[in-house]
Image 1: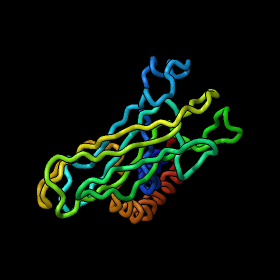
Image 2: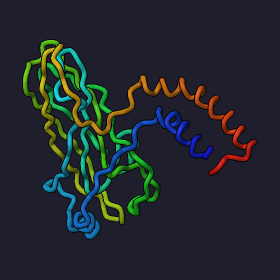
Image 3: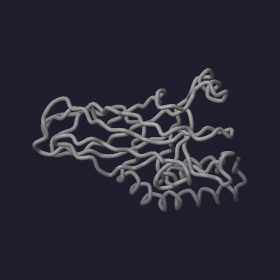
Length: 228
């Protein structure tokens, strides 16, 4: 019992300051098998799908908005912050848009992996997710807008296949600009990090929770009533 109690109380405080885990898209059995057998060539004509996310259904004038883009690649890609010799890392570029500023671009999280075409372990990811912020200035045009950009990268597959060619994926992110005091609704944003106030709350509350749990633990140990 006491182990379960410790886990329930302490786990949120230990994980609160960590970034949310990267969610990897699932591929169907047919797609996975075709990838392994080489039936899905890594060419620029077979562009991977992508999904864009916004925190809200509209952006107010004079405000910021969180944006995310998930590329559903068949293989693996690397990030600029963890370069791999001979491999073009994922690079993102956005076209200028009147009244909209792109800032705080964060590339995908990568993990150490081994591929037979490299003699050393490399940092890569199979589901690159890029997040950034946009800001609408106070005079941004109202109504529907489209933020256009492109991603360039090289894919490689597990199993020793050679690097694929340089690929480019064009992205289009629909935006709706509204007045600074207009009402907006939360949208589906599965990669949203934990708000700062929640992280601070857990950090501040952790010592109090520990002070409560420890006496309970020693009491049940002394009474012989603690269970796994």
